[in-house]
Length: 239
Image 1 (cartoon, rainbow, N blue to C red):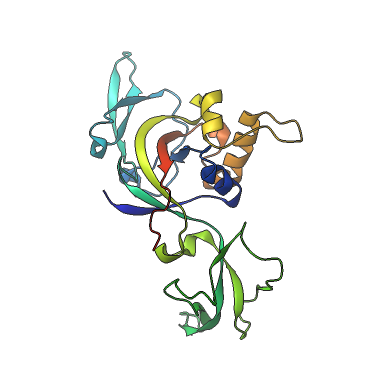
Image 2 (cartoon, rainbow, N blue to C red):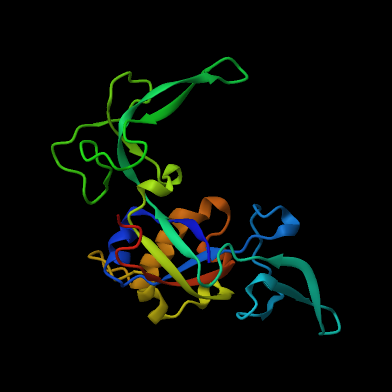
């Protein structure tokens, strides 16, 4: 068991707290392509056997040859997480501090670094806030060249472990195509119909595209995904 980070957008955080969202889908990445590049839709390809009991083997894609036989493709997708891992959720947050000088870039431009006043997360005078806990009277500073101390919005990707408030335990993994999601699983993704009349599957597809389409993993591409099944751990990491 290891502790690892996982990011979620702010609109899904309440659904995790309500124990409604228990699934998350993440696109395949392949070691043969550097683990970063998007994979095309692979029409004519099929998902090979996936060993849930031996997750390290990953998921293999197969192509169907002219003779109708399946030929193993060298691409093997590896899940980022393993069953039993503890995941701390990275989300948008607000932290008290200031932006200080941090050297220069190769082109001579000034580099800035955020320096929190509360680096250990235990100062009650300067608590960390989140999207749903930020007091209305807190003024949020936005300019990273501002010399003043104050609360600044921080992107989820910069959240350190000490700032996390939400922890999950990974219970299972499976591999499938994105559009294979069932209506039941859409709900487990924390999605429901909205006031504008969109069905839950439409809401999910739109949210998915907002997060993944620019990376070439859009809904209509129908990429292969790992489905991570988790449960929220109450009071984990509390002092």
